[in-house]
Image (tube, helix red, strand yellow):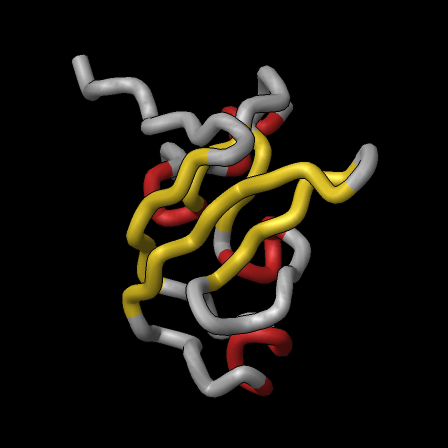
Length: 85
């Protein structure tokens, strides 16, 4: 059985390869490995890429799983069309 994806708690950071999101492309960090910290800005989760202004977690490649926990996108298990029902 595969290990469960690594979940991130707020105020926790991890090194991840940043996605090719519009924000990461504009910041010229897409495809690079950077330290990213997940934190709360009031009631909203945000991601801080070291040396850059805060962005939304999904823009930094951190998605929420089915249980509402934050997981780096590259660690989420792949699903097929039949499993998404």
